[in-house]
Length: 369
Image (cartoon, rainbow, N blue to C red; front, side, top):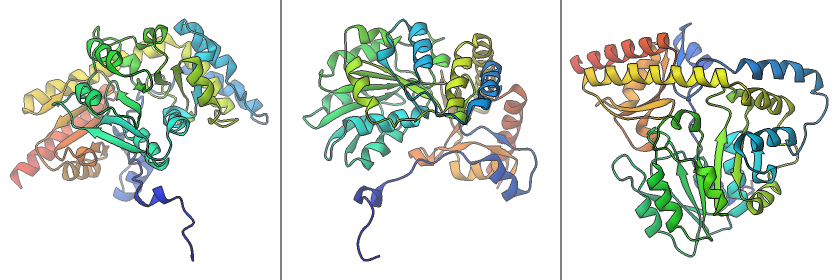
């Protein structure tokens, strides 16, 4: 090609690395049973109420979806005690983060985030010609003091993943209070609460919707993908001020959330029983893994999400590869620069047992090798 056809930011854009699909592992290793614990999916399955809602709505897919997702936004607003105008619905949390970047970022603008966190917003900001200023972790915690110290005239957004992905630990109410109090009103704080329903069992976890009563520079992101098990239809939402929601809605796309996704979310929103069972199973799985890690003398981060971050003391890529051969898909920590750590999603008790048995086998073989 005689000229550069592509947006210049694409030359250095690093794509997000998703978990390996089950079908790919089956084909590559010639194994039938594969347990995927790499993408923080709900191993209990989808909300039954969501499934029924999708079945009913399937007959209407010849019609375009409601562009404003009004019925769903009304249901969310009622549940949270806020106004419909405070909500923006998107094609999963990923699109919400992309919409945020498209709404705020001009070339040269900056956002501040931890150097170990969920990277989608940073990628979207890079695509818009902005810059992500990465603040080193304070041990396993996001360094909010460092965030505040690095705010300048170019700063548009501060990104907080809570619980933080891939570590799984929370920023407490006290820590979030400090951050909100010290961020100027012309900088927007984005709080990604994709794992909210798991984290809220911790009494130190903040109820951030209350901040919107006094602050307009906050965006809270939540999703149906994790706890209600409908990741495959892609739907999430932002809770924010009416002013910000209005501007975000201008760039979200006309029919950005399909009919089946809207229906599934409405069903899932009412399925308290499924949510309760999912959270209970999650903490049983976490408990099994924590107990095993302690027996093995492995360091791990205490999690309030549906995954755990563990230091196996060996090259994470090697351990991940050996687990793949045994039909276990996890995420190696090298992609975040934590070269001996693994991120492992919770599963059913049977899946968790099989993962732990495989991990013990792999670590034993690597020690004797």
